[in-house]
Image 1: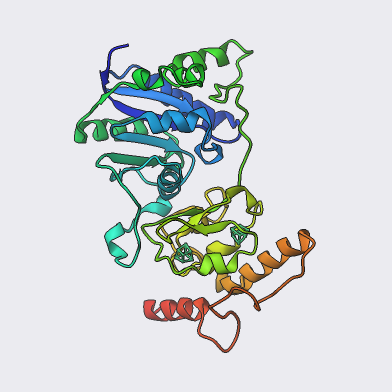
Image 2: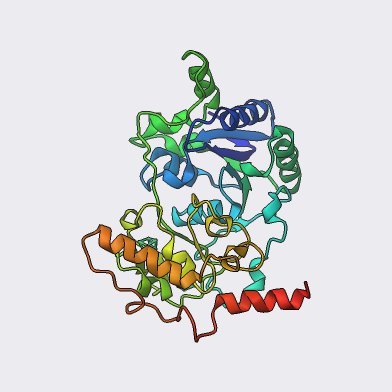
Length: 340
Ligand code: SF4
Ligand code: SF4
């Protein structure tokens, strides 16, 4: 197969099989297959892929600029990819959801430790929740095609000889995925193949925010966090995290911990602060303080595990509750400043 000079676009499918979401994915795939400047692929939900899944290996094989569309906030997409060794400089995406309008640039956080070994290529993360109209995404991809210099990508030469060759080839042929759906009583196209993908739940660290303060490793009593050879914080045991619990994201002083599937936008990676004036007014209206909530969530998981609750006695450098200045005080000050 000859090398092609095209922009690679990967669609990460929704975890469920919601018809409207699958239709948007399929409309985009069909339209992009007709675009001579684009190589399009469908993969199962990015967040659920393990390091050795063929979808992850396929993404790692892509060398040039890359666009990834998924049902996740762009920060979540970027740092899930980074976690799996799929790295690049974040490309600017103009199509963003309503709660993503005031995106901060990484330069706004000079104390952040930043990503490691970032190659000189652009990685565009696009949230499929940003619009229900496929044309909006096609226009944005066309804009990116115009601003990037496409590189020679020869995926087949990399794939040759790989034990998972057959599974990897699948991603080079999205038409087959779409056709297999049509031949199965009209069911939706699903990039999942015989490699079963199970739903996962784990934290993702945004290194453009993280200052390596180690609050999270102290707080988590389930062995999820560790450090790398440079003593940088990392999520070491992803699947030891407790499903549905986002406790450590409330403890992180930099809002650097993302749980991509959490229902609160700020925790799922929207460009807001966990418990901030901008996103989470629930704190002011009876939601309680974020640290207190985190302690309760952690205690629930400890008890579920047959261990003793520890309350605020372990792994909490910040203080919650009365008598200390906390995030609620900052929130009230913020409202005062607005002179409402
Ligand atoms: S608590 Fe947040 S800023 Fe501190 S090391 Fe953990 S992820 Fe980084
Ligand atoms: S959510 Fe709980 S179990 Fe999971 S990493 Fe955070 S503190 Fe640990």
